[in-house]
Length: 401
Image (cartoon, rainbow, N blue to C red; front, side, top):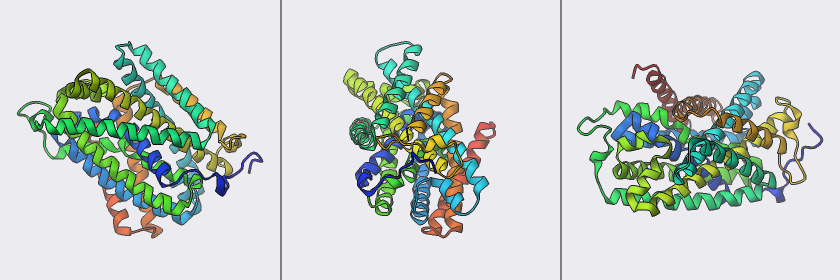
């Protein structure tokens, strides 16, 4: 183990149930409703809310498996740690590199969303959106380098602010009940099968809860904290996604949301409350994407640190600075994400990211079953849902469904 590594002591464990819940919700909603709503509506139309519901059920079952396995293994690392503890070192080595690369890609998606909303709010061109996204990564990397306490405080503020704005938007939309506006083309509804495809597309909106499995050693009373925070975060996020997809769709109309995928909720906010709604949602979107960048960088740097301690990644990833922060991983992840921001493509990134996380969720549920972690029937629901959604997504990407 690198001599610079020092595991957090009990007094340095700063994540309680509230902070952990905020990290999980921030990781989900930041890359969820703002990045994926338009993409899911383009597939599922008026069944979008069902796609979010089904996705939430699979995520909740998968969260049960993540929580049970993490408590059983007793350390951070998520699927990487589970595989390594079982002695499957080659599989764990592949898994950790795939996960770190996938999360770095995810940070870039959040940054693209941040930049798109920030630039749209001020009527600025695309190059300003790119600069804003890059600036967000740089600033939030700096917040992470200040230490876990500062990162957690930022997460709590951002999460409560964006939840308030999103639920207000949803409430206004539901008050003006107009289900016909959820259809992509008036009088031409899509079938229920589209909800199953949408469930596959939507999974990038739910991956953030698993970040808690990488923050386990930052938690106070870790077994209780992760057991409480993870399912509660998934439930709150699922309800938020359902009501916002309905409310925003009724306000702006499905066609308008699809046409403006990257800034769809700002359009809905303007329809709901005029300029004030437009500004409020734009602020919520930037805060939301920012909190997702923060939570993802925070957790991924700690995943890389764990792998480096085990000799599966370069030793520098295990180095902590005087603030007890894994500084090298934080900087590298942020720097690579900045490069990825420059190659954009929100729809392809969302669909590709969803497929990756469906495979990871399926793996974790399978591991929970064979290790008898938690309730096996719950893990079976997660495994079936993950594999089914992945299959539907493949069919969709191949143009078959």
